Amino acid sequence: MIRISIYGLDQFVVGDYSGDHTANIANILEVEEDEIIFYAPNAMIFHKGIEQTSWNVIVSINAPIKFKPFEKLLTEYIFKTLSMFAIHIEIEFEYFEESSRYQQINKKYPRYIKKENITPIEEVDDSEEEFEEHHCEDEHCECGHHHDHEHEEESEIDINDEEQLYLGNAFEEFEDMLEEMDEKKN
Image (tube, rainbow, N blue to C red; front, side, top):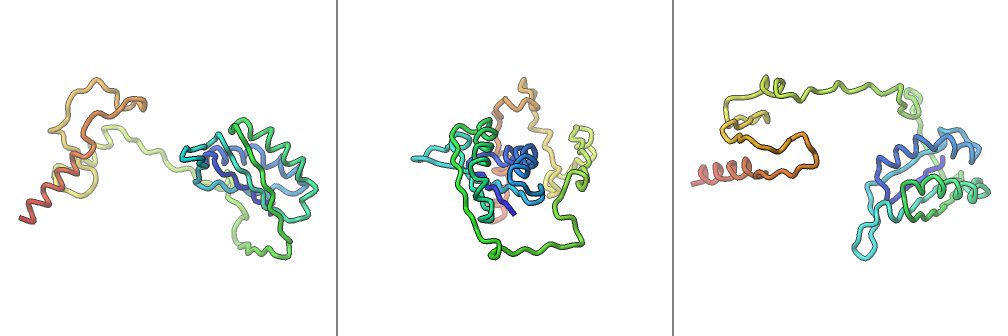
């Protein structure tokens, strides 16, 4: 098993990178694709208090010692292909004796989840019509579907535009809840 850990790069970028490059890396190392796995921790690189994500990336390759002869070729490949996502890249190899590695594989299940094994999630219709079906008239209900129509105002802001800032009071309902709790205590 060869584990390629990538620190300082977005997890989803690493996921896409692994999908695009696992076959080539397996070819370089002369192994089956099932021997390659990527690890993308939710980690950022910092230098003197400044976040370095995608600017400085550290790649750690954990592999059996028998793969040491492939080190230079694999390094060149990773530098070339990962440079599309990172400015500076460091690669470190960590080798181990195969006799020091253990694994348990459950034969009842496929070794890896693959696209053909994934069941697509039904798309949820977030339209106002669906919301209205679940709308509760009781303003104190705890179902999570309460919507206070009294405080609605016409706005020129397009709520579907992710670039617009929300200018309302994000804590309005929370503040109301705190007031109610204070009233109950007194």
